[in-house]
Image (cartoon, rainbow, N blue to C red; front, side):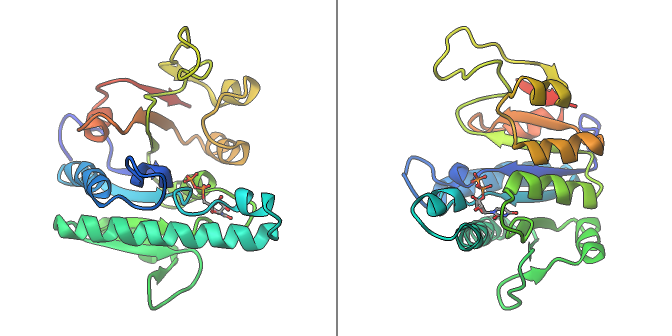
Length: 239
Ligand code: UDP
């Protein structure tokens, strides 16, 4: 691992929307490729990388159930959406010569590996990027919880949450409030007490109770992921 980067194993969480680019839906191949390049530049430093990608660019359980669908069915559709995103990212990374595995929380052996913890750890040791798909495999959860769960299971040193259009955690929505202030550092307890929009409460509790730090940074800046791993650029550390 490079002298400027002190991490050996990290989780990168991005939302499904991050893959959408300027489109209103789905995957935008040049955007997927750009994120894959960011991942490669960190992988090239020897850092072991886990990834969780959301599914909101394709389907969200809550919006399905709002339209009268059974919540659990809608959530399964959301989980399947994350598998599509994981395969899109796998394809882009392998195009750049980075070996990957897509590991699904829902068995679909023709498409992805099933989740077996010790096997996933071995992949990481062999420097394969592990993309964890299908969330936690359970309805009523989010991919933020999946990222926190897998980061704990894989003994990641931190979760890096790449955001679009925002470079950290603010005291109020920076898109609508000019005087919004970004935190350099904030505790999980404060995030919960002040209801700051970072992750959902179950993901925050799971990270807090296991002392897993979360670094929220902007995905828009090229080189942002690599920079933030070296402690450069703007970001918020939640701990
Ligand atoms: N989902 C789920 N269980 C999980 C993870 C995800 O049911 O463990 C479903 C849920 O319906 C969610 C959808 O998958 O709305 C997509 O995930 P998410 O909303 O977290 O994606 P993001 O907002 O990060 O793109």
